[in-house]
Image (cartoon, rainbow, N blue to C red; front, side, top):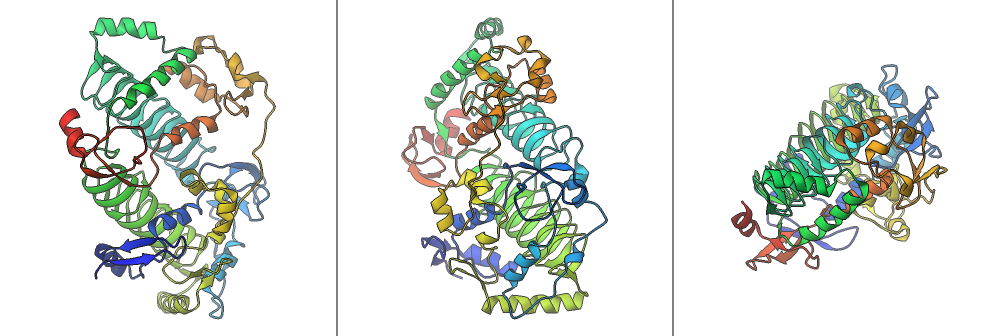
Amino acid sequence: MNPETKNCINCKKEFTVEESDFNFYEKMKVPAPTWCPECRLIRRWSFSNTWSLFWRNCDKCGERTMSMYPPEDKITVYCPKCWWADDWDGTEYAMDYDPSRPFLEQVKELSEKTPYTALENVYTSLKNSSYSNALSWSKDCYQIFWADYCESVYYSSLLNNVKYSIDCLRAKDSELCYESVGITKCYNTFFSMECDACVDVWFSRNCYNCMNCIGCANLRGESYCIFNEKYTKEDYMEKLKELNLQSSAKLRGLGQKAQYFWLTKPYRVYSGNSLNLNVTGEYVYESKNAKEMYICTNAENCKWCQIITVKSSKDCYDYSGWGNGATMMYESVQVGENVNNIMFSYYCTLDLMNLQYCFWNTAAKNNFGCVNLKRKSYCILNKEYSKEEFEKLKEKIIADMKINPYVDKLGRKFFYGEFFPPEMSKFPYNKSIAMRFFPKTKEQALSEGYAWTDKADAVYEITLKADLLPDIIEKTSEEILKEIIGCANCGRGYKITKGEYDLLRKLDLPVPHECPKCRENKRFSKLNPPKLYKRTCDKCGKDIITAFTPDRPETVFCEKCYQQEFA
C-alpha cells in the first residue's frame, strides 16, 4: 500500500502512514491510527503515573501504604501484598456484555468496581523495596522508578542492573555511581553524562572506556585527564587532592565549570551507541531496524517506541515500556516480561498473550476488555468463557466497536483500533508521565480532555536548613537522619535515609542540599525530549535529524563527522 497522509483527529496536524506501517497494521489485524504519533504517545503516557506517590490506607488490610493514587481518589486500592494475594482473581467483578452500549463505556464501568494495586511492580520479585514504583527483581532499594534488577539504589530512575548508586537516570550495568545520566557499564562514575565503560570518572560527558578523568568530553580510552588535558599519574593525583572532591562547595563549582567546558566540544547527531543498524531516534542502544525510538535497548523491527529499558522487544509499534521479552506490541504502555500480541493495554505484566483493551492483568492469556484480572484466560469484562464462546463474542464486540464507538466529552469518537480515551485515565495529567515529557498548562490539559488536580503536595516542618549542612560527609553524623532538611532550591522538607547515608559515606560524598524531587527534575532537564528536528551538521553542513533543536547552543556533528574526529 502507498504512503498516506492523514490529519490527526486530535491536533489536526498532518502525519504520514508509510507502506511499512500499513504492513504492520495488517499483521496485527488493526486499522491504521487516526491520531498522530505524538498525540498517541501523550495519550498513552497520560494513563501512567510513575513518579507521583502518596500515602493512603489499603482498602483490604487497612495498613498504610505508598500509592500512585491519593487517598481522596474514590477507587478501591490494595497494597501490593493484598493485590498479589491468591484469595481473589478479579472474576468476582465480572460483567455481561451489553451490545446496546459502547464497549469502552462498559470497560470504564468495570474499572470503577475492581481493586487496584497501590504500586506498579512485580511484588513477588522484590525484597525490601516497598517505597519504589514501576520496578521488578530488585533488592534493598528506595525511591527508584522504572527499574529492574537493581540492588541498594536510591532516588534513581530508568535503570537496569544497577547497584550501590544514588541519584542516577538512564543507568545500566553500573555500580557505585552518583548523579549521572546515561551511563552504561560504569564504576565509580560521578556527575557525568552519556559515558560507557568508565571507571573513576567525574563531571565528564560522552567518554568511552576512560579511567581517572575529570571534566572531560568526547574522550576514548584515555586516563588521567582533566578537562581533556593529559596528566601523568603522579600529577593527576596531586591535582585530585587540590580539587577536594569531597567538598559540597567545591563540587558545585566544578560542576558549573564542566557544563561550560562541555559546550565547547561537539555533540553527536544522536545519543546512543554505535551498535545499531538502521536506527533513528534518541538514546537507542543495540537495536536493529528501529525508527523514531526514544530510550530503548535491544529493539528490533520497532517504531515509535519509548523507554524499553530491558532487552528485548521485537515487532512493536507505539509501545512505551518496558520490554523484557516483548513481541508484537501495539498501542500499549508499561506492559512487559514475556508478553506477546498485546494491543490497546496498559499496566500488564508477567507471561501475557493475546490481550486487547486490558489493564492490570497478570499471568493472563486471551482476554478482551478486562481490568484487574489475575491468572485467567478467555475472559471478556472479567467473565470467563469457553474458547469457542470467547472467540465468537470477541469478534462480535470488535464489529460493534466499528459502528458504535465510545464518544468522549469533547465529541471525539473512539472506534476499534484506538487506545482508551484520555478521560478514562485514573490519573490527572499533571501527575502522569505525560506531564514530565510534554508539559501542559491546566487550561491546555482540560481543553484536550485530560483531568487535572490542584491539590498541593504535603509540606513538612523544617528542622535544619540546607545551608547549615556540613560541607563534607566526614563531619556529618547519623544525627542527620533525625532532621527534616529545607531544600536549598524549593524550600520543601526532605530526609536522609539510613541506606542513603551509609552509601554516601562509602562514596565519600556530602549530603545533598536539595530535595529528591528537585534533584530528579534537574536530571530529567538534561534529557533531550522525545522529538526529532531538522538541522545541519555544524562541520560539513549535511542535513541531519536530531533531538537538538536548531536554536540550541550545542555544536552538533553528523555521525560521520563525529566518528572521524572522535572514534
